[in-house]
Image (tube, rainbow, N blue to C red; front, side, top):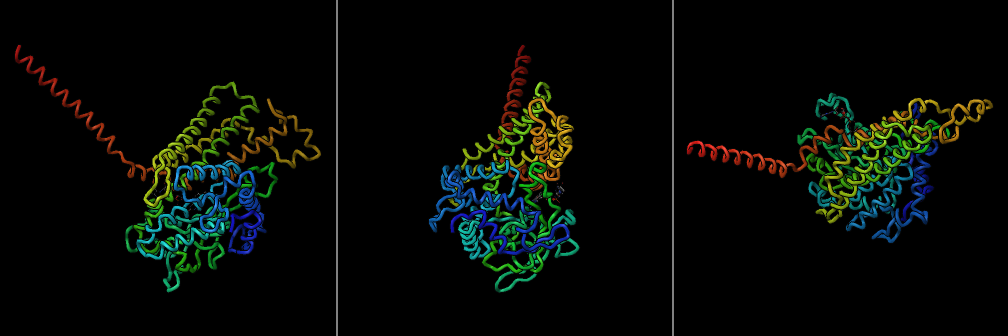
Length: 500
Ligand SMILES: Cc1cc2nc3c(=O)[nH]c(=O)nc-3n(C[C@H](O)[C@H](O)[C@H](O)COP(=O)(O)OP(=O)(O)OC[C@H]3O[C@@H](n4cnc5c(N)ncnc54)[C@H](O)[C@@H]3O)c2cc1C
């Protein structure tokens, strides 16, 4: 089946009722609920772009199995050109949301692409798992599926291991092993886009202990979001159903986060990729290099997002005439430095790409690790800069209903600007507000801080995995050389003094 259109994506959601809880309601047809209408419209547009003659060649390629055109994010890159093609497609989709969507479908198709190439890794514990991973990748590619994922166990008590929690079934675990599959009970947090995805990837986080007691929590599988017993418990929606003028971002790009509850969910064996072996499970993202292909999607998105922040900050400065002030220059320069750093890291990752052991052209790890440790610090600062340069302008931004009210014209002139009409200024500041103050904007900062993992533990992982030995050796040699030269000088000067 070729890449889907937007209406096919929506029809798929409608034909697969799921169990979603939001605002005191139980919803099964998410296409009919206002909390999801903005994001569904946006995802449908992304799918439609695959058929737009302007983007078709970027966003799709010819399936090696069927000859149909399928999504480029499923492309297994064998050459640098393939990797570049993936970059172009990822950037194209990110441009549509100015990087405000974290979970465009290319994020998780990148993981499936890498898992499938690394089938032998998954075969370690059970030879069937290799076939399962490969079959599922082909299915997702040919059916153009949109996936979410959930990796993290509920917070409960982080000072204790998963198996030490008071109730062993709070974190999702295997309740029963059957001839035809496994039954899962418990919960996971968090699944962004969960309620409006086709399927959910349920993989372990990388904190499983090599302790048999953690084995029941050790699995990796993908199932439809409509699977009986699977429940999505949503937070409050940040799409408040307001006009696009008032909530330019929230009304379009609210991708929703949800806690996922497994109420005796049956998973057939053919959907299981990992099972019962913490060591293999912990290594899956790293050994398959899925983490690097996902990080590649993230850096493309974050470059687009930073370009947006630079454009927004610059337009605000121009609009209210604050360009003469030196600290404004310094703040914009911070954004530029962030942008150029991310671009440089992207370039270095692609320049250093090599074929991995699975025959996949894989971006270099060092620059991508640097980028995913850097951006959680950059983005919250960008949000702060938008607040600092906008000041009370963020509050002086009435909605379209106020402007259109009979008295609207009376007040309009008080929203004048150095280089914009009152209406242009208000629309711009609504956007700045939705970027930096609204619940949507605050959640973006939280997302960038955490979605790729706890920044503290990510830094710890980099500390432990980065090969620092050559540099220690160089410094060690320099120190030793200095010591030797000093000793020689001392013994030389001693000989002189004794001889005089
Ligand atoms: C907006 C948003 C969207 C997300 N979307 C998804 C998604 O789609 N799928 C998904 O799987 N996950 C998602 N996540 C979850 C994300 O992966 C986690 O937030 C991240 O891994 C951190 O885990 P945690 O939130 O459980 O924090 P915790 O691990 O509970 O950490 C809480 C605090 O305690 C500290 N802490 C806890 N344990 C330790 C330790 N051992 N050592 C040092 N410090 C520690 C942390 O540094 C942090 O300050 C999302 C998160 C957010 C905020």
